[in-house]
Image (cartoon, rainbow, N blue to C red; front, side, top):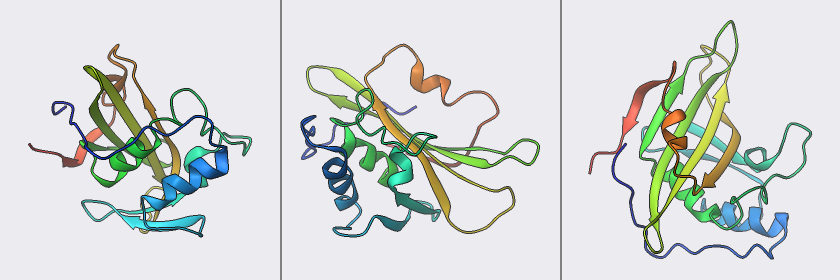
Length: 161
């Protein structure tokens, strides 16, 4: 992956905000104030559905406060808008195709942050990719590299700096 980037002007969000306030702040990064969903076109033309599904678990409950997600939420938006890499994972046995958006950032005192967002849609379908998860982690144990390996293909995009 490219070397981690520094982003100026992005704030860490307060963990004292509730789920809806955090989600509203995240959506403002995509120009939305009152709607709960927006279609966003990424750097290479993929149409992505940005909505609360990025932050819901399989039971439909919020996971926006899970782990380090809340404080680094604006970095996860930057990952979707300007990823370091986009990987395609073809669906297997009729399963869903997935796009993995990956970025690394330098954050305070030499710390590193890895961001992952995943969107999916049915094989051979055209149109909008639905959001499935979006998170950040400060784990520095090869975690982000594990998301780049296996059957995924660096097919669409790699940021060249």
